[in-house]
Image 1: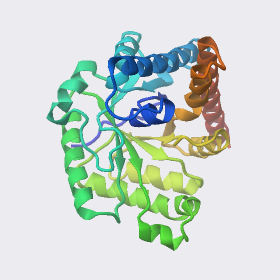
Image 2 (image 1 turned 180 degrees about the vertical axis):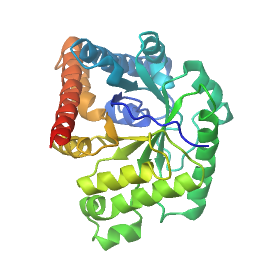
Image 3 (image 1 turned 90 degrees about the horizontal axis):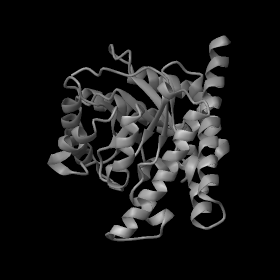
Length: 310
C-alpha cells in the first residue's frame, strides 16, 4: 500500500524518551510507583511548556510538532491536539533491540485514542545483521504500515537506527565515527530499500545525522524511489552536542526532501537537569528549552533559504 507522504516543513521537539529518561534523568530502575510516574510527567510538562513558548515567540505553528509518549505524556497529547499542534506518539516498546509494539495486539486502540498526526516507531535494523531478527521486525512493521495507510488514520513516521555489526566495526578498526561516515550511509539506503520491498511504507523517515550532502541526497532518493514522491525525511539529533547537531541540520537543510528535524535531548536535557538540581527555576528551564528549539528552527530555515538561493 503506497505511502501518502508528508513533504511540508516539520520541526519536531521529541521527548518520548521512557527508559532512558527513567534511568538517565532520574536514576530509577524497575517498575515505577505513582509518585515517580508523576514526577516524570511533570518534567515532560516543562518541555511542553517550552515548546508552546517557542511557538508564541515565533516558531510557525503549522511547521512545529512534538513527539511524546502515552505513558508519561497522555495529558500533553490531549492538550496539544486541542490546541491544534501536530503531534506524534510512539508505538514501540522502549529500549528494545527488536521492534515490538508497546501495547501488543492492542496497538490500534492506543493510536486511535489520541489520533496523532504521526504514529512513530524507532527501529534498529542493519541489513547485514541477523536475518531472522530483521524478518520478524519487518513483519510487525508491515502490519502497522498496512493499518496506518487505511483512510483517515495517522501518518507513519519511521526512526531508523543502523547499529554496527561487529564485522563492520572491525573494517574501521572500531572507530564509530568512521563507521558513521564511511559505512552507515550505504547501509541506511539498503535498509530503506529492503523495508519498502517488504511492504513497510513510512510517510516520513527520521534519519540519523549525516556528515555529507551527497549521503543526504542518496537517502532522499531511496525514500522517494518508485513514485514515493511526497515522502519526507527529517534529521535527528541523536543526543549529540550543539555543534554537531548544527552541522547535521545545516547539511540536511540544503537537500530537497529533507523537510526538517527532530532534536530533543540537545534542547531539553541540560535545562531539566539544572531545574531538578535546583540550579535553575522552572521558568528558566522553560525559557532555555524554548530558546534552543527556536534557534534550531531558525538555523534550518536559514540554511535552506541559502541553498535555494544558490
